[in-house]
Length: 157
DNA sequence: GCCAACGTTGGC
DNA sequence: GCCAACGTTGGC
Image 1 (cartoon, protein in one colour):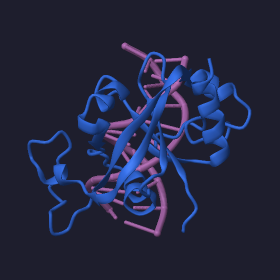
Image 2 (tube, helix red, strand yellow):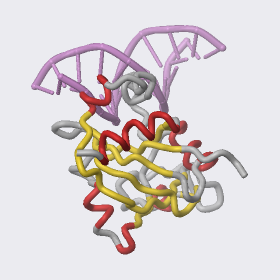
Image 3 (cartoon, helix red, strand yellow):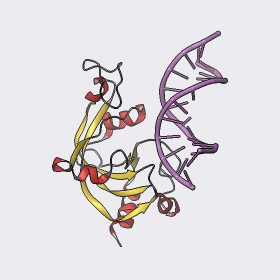
């Protein structure tokens, strides 16, 4: 069995917040609309059922981590790409030759305490996170150590 | 609103 | 294949 990995996914709360996810049927949603190859590869190839996700609010005031989710369905074609009425249509992607992929995630728990980016940047052990290194990647890997540190920050008062 | 960082596009 | 131009992300 492959080693269990951890992830972080960004969302702009104005567009789709952690609360929106918890309000879905079974707290589960398709993570559609990602149009970046590196993030696509991660969702298509690397994310496995049962692995943990830190849900992060980007472009928020302030930005930060708000809770955890879990991968409940592994990578499959993002059908919104060939829907001209979707928010992120890509005519080059077709059902026969899909370019973009998504996963399904399910909300697990909201942090007791919001963990702002400012604090993540100041916390020893988190300095190598893509988040801190100014990466724009919307789906990023998180090490076990980083996962443990952030959950400790978020789950303790 | 500004702008740095970064990814993508397209001319050559 | 290089790289300038352009568009987007996202913190501040």
